[in-house]
Image (cartoon, rainbow, N blue to C red; front, side):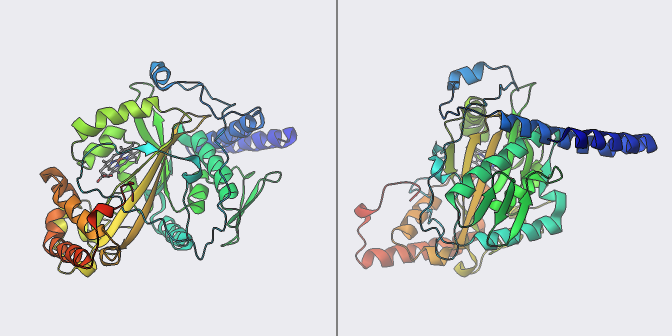
Length: 413
Ligand code: HEM
């Protein structure tokens, strides 16, 4: 960093402050952003002899004072393998069919292999364009960075750059010396020296995922949503969940069995999550329209009250879409923040039901939902068209010689 330029910068800031004291309130967040930017840059430079084994065990993590994190400057996220022959035109979305014959409400997490942290495919441009349009139209309804998460947002961005530029070298070019990132498909460039760069929006430009940062509270050890860019969550709004604690996020969405099967385990899991134990989970929903960004069937996005009550019953299976998320959870080494990603896969039910074993398994899965899950997932709005259709397709496949015993067992299929 050039020392003279820093003096000039601080002199000019002082002049502005003297000129108009009421601008303090506006300048404060900008100063915080600049301070975090320089702090992050300096820490990055001091990185040496990196390792990939976390020094803290899960139980040690639990003994930390609430909100305390000692930056682990030696720990390094494992470098992913290059995705050979990955193509923005030909690499299809991973066909996750993450439903089982029997639905159980539990955390459903699995260990994540580092190579799979971020999964990109030939829908990248579609997601990218939709995200930019949503950011343009909705502004801070779909992204925010609180003062607690400025440093973590930069760290998340650098982690994503390190990962994506190595894993998908045809899509991203990063000049480490000059700190200039280029997305080849769109010809966008991002200057990482620019302290006015928005780290979370820049990160959102790179991946198809929604991005969230959770920070531990020094008072109660609970995690709250302190930054993120979530543009197409379908059934929930980022602005409503911003700065909520993990419990409140899920209670306000009436997530079934949160207080018994999920909440206590999740809070413990978040506190104990070590650097080297990232996880993933998959889920699925049936949607009554084909809007990836916001499911209009449950009400207008701008209306206060949205929910399945607002939806009218589906009349054709052609209107039903399969929405499935792959979520990842990991901790960031310098700030200790938790980075949460949500990648949505979206396709017509009718297309998916051409695949072997899918209709029977989906039918069994949906009919095993308990009443609270039915309410949460809008069962009564689509059951009259979906269940007979799945029954018919399952019987057709079985009559055509499908052997149920040969169904693959490897969740998420
Ligand atoms: C291990 C971590 C987590 C687990 C096990 C978990 C579990 C769940 C479950 C079971 C649901 C119901 C829908 C589904 O089946 O996915 C849900 C919904 C949801 N989760 Fe999580 N969650 C986790 C982390 C998070 C985080 C970090 C956020 C922060 C944004 C979050 C935000 C939400 C939201 C917004 C919903 C929808 C609630 C609604 O319908 O309004 N979850 N979660």
